[in-house]
Image (cartoon, one colour):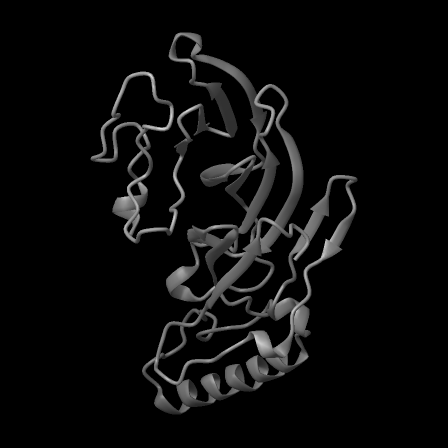
Length: 253
C-alpha cells in the first residue's frame, strides 16, 4: 500500500490530457481501488496544486496554465506526513512527538508514544487557507482512505505501561544469577509488584484520550465507549490499532 501512496501526483497516472486547454484532464494519485482516494504529499484537481513540504502546506493556482503561481501557504504543527483533498477541504496528517509517561518494554525502549494530529483546512480560497478543526489522537499515523466524504484513518500505538513496571531483576554486583531459587523468588516479587501497579493505574492512563480543538480554541476531550474496543483471540504483539471514521460533510461527527 505504501508503495502506491508514495507516488506523487505529478505524472503518477497513466492517463494523458485529451487537449492542452482542458483543466479536467490531469494526473492524480495512483489509487489501488477505484473510488478510494489515497493520501499523498501532492494533490491537484486540474486547477489547483497543493504540496506538503517540511511543516508547510503550499497552495498554487495551476489554471490557466500561463498563470501558474504560488498564491498561499499555511504552517502545519508537527511533522507533516500526508493529506487528502476533498473539494474545498484538506485533511493534513502530521506527527507530534510525545514521550511515554510509563515504562517501555525492553524490545521497544527506543520508541515513544506519539500523537497524530489531523488538521482540517478550508482551501476554497487559496490565498487565505483557514484551519477549521484540529483533532489530536494518541498513536502513530499509518494510512488513510477517502470514499466520497467518508474518511478512514488507521493509527497504532504502544501499551502505556505503569511507571515502575519491571521486566527483570535489578542488577546486583556479586549476585549469582545462576541461582535458580534466588531467580525464581526475584521474579515472583517482580510479578507481585507489577500486578499491583497494573491494577492501580487508572483507565485514562492505559487509554489516553485525544481531544478536538475548534476554531475558537475550545478543546473538547475525545470520549471512548467500551463497545469501541476489541481484543483478538490470536497471539499478536501487544499494542493498539485504531480505525478512525470521519465525515467531511459533518465535521463535528
